[in-house]
Image (cartoon, rainbow, N blue to C red; front, side):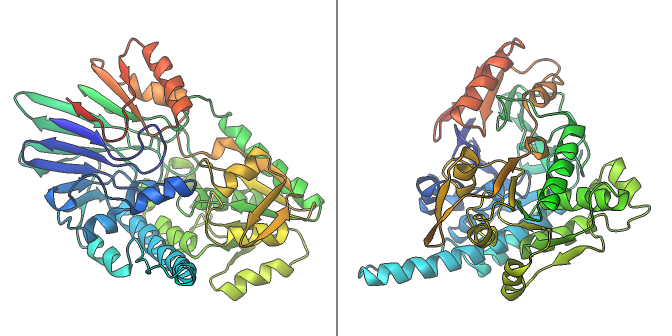
Length: 461
């Protein structure tokens, strides 16, 4: 039996595992690469395998770096079932539809440049029709139930505590003997804002585990809320605009939930809060649908706020004209816009129009992949180029690590400690080199053997 990584190997994005057992072939995830131009270019390259040869796919969750290349996979011949939790299916549709829109826009502008150079036009990586074809292959499963994927491969989904519908996977594989493999997917930190804690997996011969934050600890849970309150109040006193680049799935909903609670409790002043992301708006509708996956705190909040993501001061902006009107607002306000790494979406326009004003604040609340605009601003660049112009970074730059949807190294180690007996080997993935190396040393300290695989490397189980 062979496992091979076609992404998220010594890097965070592009998650895609291939598992081959004789003629049975399955995939776990097929996500997009995110980061600088060289990284993004990988999305347009061949997969490294023939999609038509694969029988099925298991989708751990609906973040772009885990589901973003599924329509391309289907476009190139994949016809198997795609197994996932119900909330993941709905969120994946939102994510992939938006990705197709961005691909069309990017290709349009790229082809204008190519025409000037007498180069042939390019096609987008996929379109809406490819997304629809992909959605027809989705098959809903429940947590904690055995699902027969192929003749000799059975899967069980465990709550990963990461985002709504996220799962870790245990595979039961009938080879010469029974083999158990576990794939962490992305693991959430304990006591997340919205979702429940991860459910442990207790049996596996080998484990594949993410290491996004394998080199650090998150601040205490209560500290992240205190920091958010401090930053909101500070920005309000300075009379500025608080810009929050946010991922549309989970992070936007977490921030809306917290701000709504703060205003209800009188901890922050009441002010307009603009959700300037059509994708985040659609994702929030999905969140409101699957309330069974909320943690107890959110369910308690719903006794007084039926929809935990809405409040009187919230303004949903759908059209481009509504988004542009935010530029002319002079009173203190909060703008939540995508995307979280400032590499696309409406946040780029808000940064261009507002970053030179020292009254304003730009707050990062999530991972910034190397090479993205968010990465460089967070790193301290004082002059940036975006949307064709250069601007000075005069606004206050803030960062809150505690809102990460990923577990820190303590959370990852705690998840590993649930295995009885200990796995034979732990394969460390979904992390940049330094993070994966640091986490490997911590796993070794637990008397576990580790290995950090490279992309396209064949691993015999």
